Image (tube, rainbow, N blue to C red; front, top):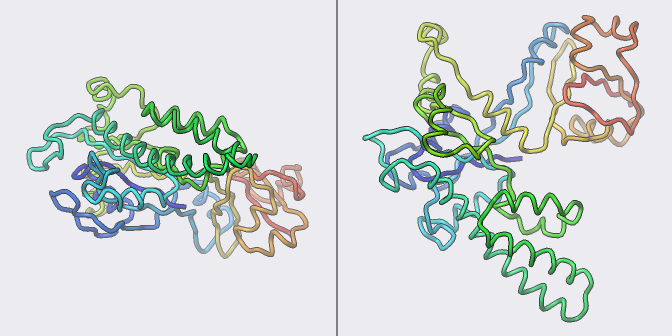
Length: 353
């Protein structure tokens, strides 16, 4: 699954992508220096792996990963094709979640596409373009469903009613209301899943500021209090850290804050990890939340799902507390679970097939 990095031009998207992936990209002080999306694989930080590896004496560690996509800057009018808007909106449609970079830092050397810093306006510009693009998609679908409904097609009538309500909500230009409506549909949300709505994708905001520790004051200054899902970063500093040695980082008392961004982004995808461990390797496996034990086994190999018999499972915290699987078995903490067991984040699992 992919996470798209979006925002206006010249606000730090490509610099953030470089800091996350350590991939060199074209970063210049002019709009649309990124045209084709850059894609990079990023390890998901997990301190549990290191502790578990020491316990097992593992030869290597393998972290869960996720993909980040650096998408070119959107501008007002993108839904109407401004600034290669149609191409960039299509790129957003192909990702599963959005990291929206918002500029809070001041700089005379880096131009702002709107001439001055106003993060609330910038957010409204981006989110409005997502909604406008969806309105066009929804209107096309609604017109088709209205024709089908004339023949008393029950499925078409049901879908038409849902899409019609969705259109009314999009007209209100409010992403939160779009998310709430889709959540309220329950299983019926599958009836509109093929629309690939931009406005339905979960969003994590990245406030690009020169002083992340002072973010509370900046949130008050720019009236951003209603935004709860955010991370504050000095993206330029994150890029600089890549070029420094560990000694330099320690001497300058610098600390990367990217782990919070990666972890929160990963969580938006509806994913979690379980762990396996042994002498050869300790590894984090990515699965959808609420997966059964056989479904979790599929992450390793299809046979683990098809030939599943049972799994030995212990919570990471319990294993670390007792110090070994032998003691865990003696105390009853290591248990055997069947095919209906719902795997929990941080479960240490051994499949038996």
